[in-house]
Image (tube, rainbow, N blue to C red):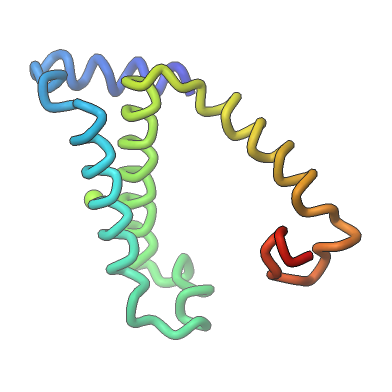
Length: 114
Ligand SMILES: [Mg+2]
């Protein structure tokens, strides 16, 4: 993950784009890329969405948009000096406590209502 963040930071620096990579701009770019991912799925049936990676014409587009989302997420975390792996591990631990498997199994209920 650190290698990817370094690569993205260097990519931006070589183009003098750091000036544009403010947290506000990066979070907006991230949301824009999530929007592009949503656009691929928005009119699909649930069955079509599940099988999307079997559709060669759409699979590459999905992978590209996921990469765009991931790239901006990494850039944003880099600029904010957030260790994403550590933050995600922390969230997983918190969710283990909020959603005990014996109570949450097979249910989509919010933790406050378990
Ligand atoms: Mg995109």
